Amino acid sequence: MDSPLQTWITGWLAFLELALPLAFAVVVLAHGCYRVVMRRGGWPWKTMVFGLGAALVFLLLTNVVSVADWFVEELPIN
Image 1 (cartoon, rainbow, N blue to C red):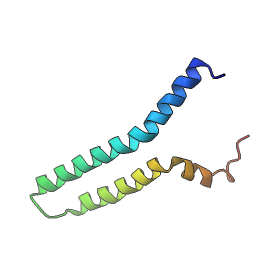
Image 2 (image 1 turned 180 degrees about the vertical axis):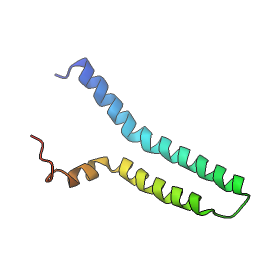
Image 3 (image 1 turned 30 degrees about the vertical axis):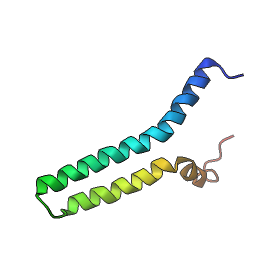
Image 4 (image 1 turned 90 degrees about the horizontal axis):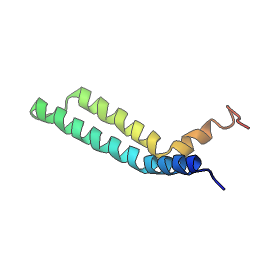
């Protein structure tokens, strides 16, 4: 039987696994729209680099388990 603390931590991790990538996507979209509007059209290179970096971070956030599996052989944890 799990302790109340373990149950609480497991619940929060499950919530963050779903909510964190979604919140990140909303913030990135809002910031990208703001940069384009302030530029008054066009796609500045900083906005494009920011978008590509944000897409990479989003993929990492949504695939944390898969990314962790890459390092299992390199960093064996008993």
